[in-house]
Image 1: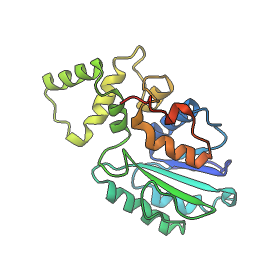
Image 2: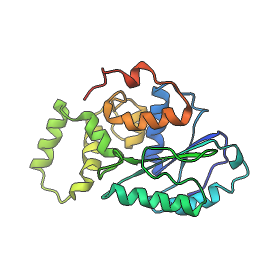
Image 3: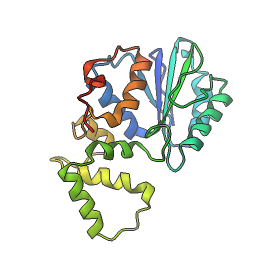
Image 4: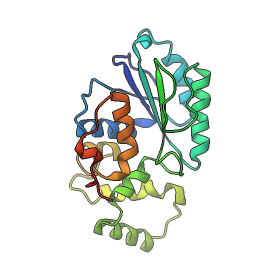
Length: 217
């Protein structure tokens, strides 16, 4: 994955354009200055190890103060975290001992393994959690029950997320662009781990929207 010239002291490195678009939508929703965090797509789950050594040699890397790294757990969150740690070690960057907890200084590095640093899954797992219990979610369940399919269990969140998008007025978009169009409830508590990472990287003080008890299940 090609890299963009570093323009901000806070860097968010994400897996794929879907996550990049989702993060852009969430940053806007939280009223975080888009200039405070530069988002870079490092590619697929195996591409971070090639991305980081080039990233740290960028001409303006010296201005970087904080780095957040977000990738999917897929089948194993611990294995995914170990993979990120290995890539950080190879690039001679601070290596967190625990997902969700920053490590180092100038740059400080934090890692978020979706959906929650512990369980298997991906961005779409959180998206499905944000619509769980809605009438539409019940319909989606019934749809998959009546249509025979061979989707592996760990890939079903992707299918369910796209089924949700299919219920919207303009469904011809990806899950990340769907966030920009308001298809997901970005106030939902399912997104709290991501919100906390964004606040940490940007230095933003928590606002009522992201911390109040009114966040929906």
